[in-house]
Amino acid sequence: HEHTRVFRECAELGKELEQLGDQLLDARSAAKVGIIYDWENRWALDLSSGPSVALDYVNEVHKYYDALYQQNIEADMIGVEENLSKYEIVIAPVMYMVKPGFAEKVEAFVKAGGTFITTYFSGIVNENDLVTVGGYPGELRKVLGIWAEEIDALLPGMSNELVLDKTWGSLSGSYKCDLLCDLIHAEGAEVLAEYGSDFYKGMPALTVNKFGEGKAYYVATSPEAGFLQGFLANLCAEKNIQPLVTAPEGIESVQRVKDGVSYLFLLNHTAGDLSADIGAAERTDLLTGNVISGSAVVPGRGVLILSDKK
Image (cartoon, rainbow, N blue to C red):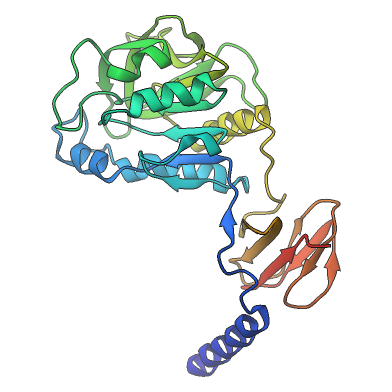
């Protein structure tokens, strides 16, 4: 039974690929959000006798990616050598190792109007894993407008609160944070949220620094998923970066562009049919030829490939 099902699915996939031909070949992402993932930074962090054995670089990067994924907002995973100018927002979680030229690149990106986000335990060492002197977050201190005094590592099961001073989009009140809490001081940055408890209650937990035409945010701790979703939704709204679709959990959306034509892929990871709102503009389903707008039904374990070509 299982063999028959797999064979049928493979045959169906082959038929679909034949039907599409080279239409999608070389189509590229047009994402306006970039998340930095740096292998050497990962290795350096893994080998560091850091403040907590629970600190996992991949996990922390994934939290930011997932906050966008859950809202159907596209993001590219990029390296530190990537050209940042094609992005509106660049996120660099736990940038422990700052390589030569990276801080200058970030400063130029923010000066030109970009939004940059980094987190606790950043700007600690250089490319040779030697500690940066002159206070943390090292070379990123100028663009972020803060300095970090020390780090509180929370034991498993322990948490603190990140408390917003006012309602901001869907965010208000307090949110759980854990793992690590940077004890920071604002040097020109505006404080958006503070810690809710412990001896550093009232110290900044989230800051923003206006730098040139752009802004640089420092997230001093590891907040819960609900906070990160609201936070990134706010920053995307400011930059007019819209979710690709409005859809329930279980739908994955990806968009690729080729020769000015965009292709929206909707994948249903569940067994039952799900509906996604693709907006008012008409799109053509490349696999069926149907023209649809508004609500699009994605069959269980199925895919829609929708083109905006007129």
